[in-house]
Structures are given as C-alpha cells and as structure tokens.
Image (tube, rainbow, N blue to C red; front, side, top):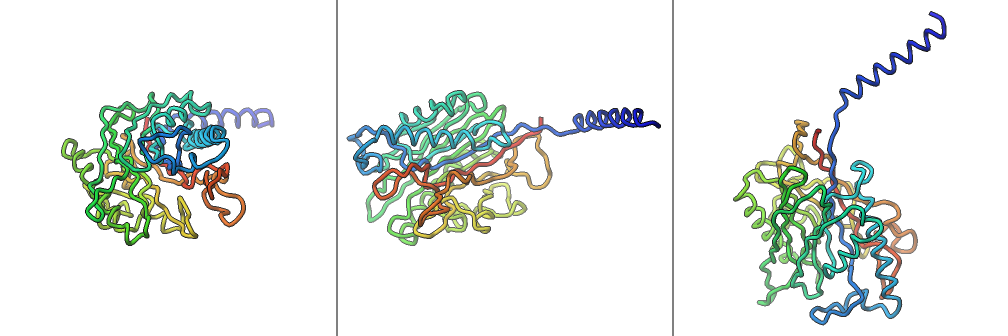
Length: 351
C-alpha cells in the first residue's frame, strides 16, 4: 500500500471511529445549584424600621453609592462564573444570605453580568434585628417555583425571643422534576461557639420540621438544604440533630447526605476568622438526589459538590493573605467580594 492509500485509509478509519464514539457518548443535562453569603449587601438608604445604621455600608463616610455599585458588580460577576465550566451557564438556582431587601437583589440580577440570564427572585423580609435576609434566585427557563414560605426557628435566650433569619422553603420544578430547596442562615457564634451552640441546634430542629413537612406530602422528595450554617459539618447541629451522613453507603431513606464533611476533613474552608478556618457554607441533599454507585442518571442526581474558591476571591497580601477577600474591614471598603466563598454542586441527568 503506497503512502497516498495509507493516508486515505487512516483518514477513513479515524472518521469511522469518531462517528462511533459520538453515537455511543453519553450526553447529560447539567444544572448548577449554588449558595453564596453576599456579606452585608445593604443599600445606601437608611431604613428606620431596621438597624441598618450598624451595617458596614451605612458606616462608610464617603462614596457609599460608588462602593455599593462596585460590590454589586463584583458579586454578579462571581455568580456568573459559578458552574460555568461544566454547565456552560451560571447557576440555575442560587440561595443567598446577608441581603438587606428585595431591592438589592433586583440590582444584582440586573447587572450586566446577569441580566441576560433573566433571574427570578423569592424573598421575604425576616425579623432579624439587623435586617438581613435569605433569598433564592433562579433562572426562569430552568426552574419554575410552585410554592414558597418561610419558617422562623422558635428560639429563646434568657426567656426572650431571639429574632433570627428565616428559613426559606421553595418548591418547584427544575426542568420537569419537582425539588424542594431550604435556604438557611443560622444564628452566629457571637459570644463563643459553646455558648451559642443551642441556638443553632434549635435552627437544626426547625430544618427537621420543614423536611418532615415535605416528606409528609411526598415520601421520596428531592430535598436540598443549603446555607451559611455558622457550624462546621462535624458540629452537633449536623451530627446529633440532623444526623447527617458522610459516607454515601450509609445514607438511608430518611437521611441527609453532607458532601462537604469530607471536604472539611481534607482541610477545605469557606471562611476564616481570627486564624480559624471553617466550612460553614454547605449544600446537603436527600437520598433521591444521591448516586450511590448505581450510575443511574435517568433523573437528576448529584454529580459532585465543590467550593468556588477561585484565586481572585482570595486576599493577595497582608495578614489575611489566602483568606476570602472580604468587602469591608476596619470600617472601610476593601474592594473585595465577600468574607465567604460560594459553594455549588452539579446535578446531572442523562438526555
């Protein structure tokens, strides 16, 4: 066989192999689910009904408007990149915390980075004294909310009601599958972890009640509970109250799987404070969203869970080098993004 015929044979063989490979290649729909603590996303207007004067934005003496729009731009740019590598678009669904009101969310989704995605908003004003809320943003072409409501943990401290953030439940269709999302921002560690621990345990009990309410109507419900929990995966709120599982093989019908527990064991974090590294931001799932090795992706299953800790989101210098590049510090604006890294997971389904 001469060189010309050999070359032609190789080309034909390559085309046949490529065609066969393409026909047998599995194709998947990929949707990104995310959560992001937006670190004091307050507007520049004094709201007399809440204590927003204590927010870092209102404490600024100059250039509040410039700072506000710079922060909006940075946060929107970050959200636009989450999950982009695999899903080829920004998150289909993203829970957020530390937002002052619906207005700041509208400014966020109208940013040049997100406006083409046509995000919808689910938001309620919570009774939190600082006026910070949780919310859910969703791309309307992928997710259709059917029902949403809020629950406030029944927490008392020294016989006084603790007004903390609501837990937001949103149920709806991700493409053609019904899912339920709980967005959380549990009580802080103010006063120290041991002293404040019962407050987060109460918040965990509230989560259980919401999950039980969902399962009472839908036994095999696909549930995601996400948020800034102000606890690490190994704390009592997760291990003793929610009874989260670290290993897929141990997840039973009514259990909750926490993919971030293994990441925490490996030393990953979503925030740092006073030289302590913590992984407070997580997305947990119920059994029907978990692939336990069967590789059955006929319905949406979690492919992998990650932390969006790109280099630009970290401080580059000083004593906080390597920490999340926060927006506010020592009464001023740093030009950063947030004091938390976003977290996200891919849900995939075979086409």
